[in-house]
Length: 247
Image 1 (spheres, rainbow, N blue to C red):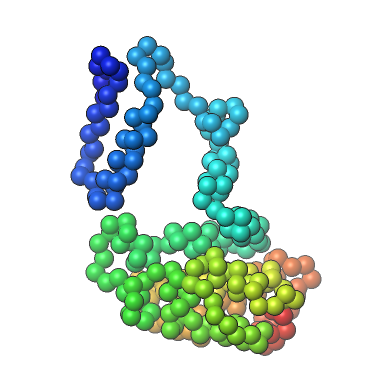
Image 2: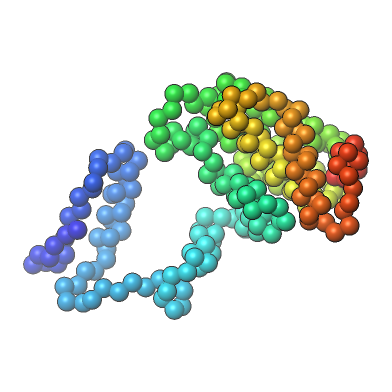
């Protein structure tokens, strides 16, 4: 990686492949960072993890450090709420990926330099597929949120950024709603949209909004049964009086 000369250590890095344009900027920044580190000829190297007082790496300390650097207080609160919800781990993991924009949408695949033939939204085909459009602003999914809001008889704009949409939808309309149930419904609806989106792309199934809504309601109902003690309402009764149960 380098060699010693009379005036000290000199770096000589050889990359195993040609860098992409955005990687060249990262490489320059990386060289600036490591050039400030003093390399001593006769001193043994040791590895120390400064985020822990013991100097030993732990995933929990790395996670805390990343939260402090990359997330606002509001985001930290939302992530804590999601991980504490009594929902299937797969649903919680999906929600985390959605909020962090880590789902393999076509827009994200392009940013990872993956070649795809069609970057348009698979539901409407009008714009590039991004999480904000696919889940919240597409003409095939936006009516699902309107219908959900009609249960509370409220109207109003919703943001397209996932974390902002979650906060506004679950907490921004009425103070007296059951927020935990609304959070569960938000997770159920978004995860079902993603499931049917994948069925459209990989299996050629049609995207039927009514089936998406019905499947999301089944998921939300089954999670409620597991999460809330004393909840023994049948699905037919629950779905027929959906407005009362989300108020």
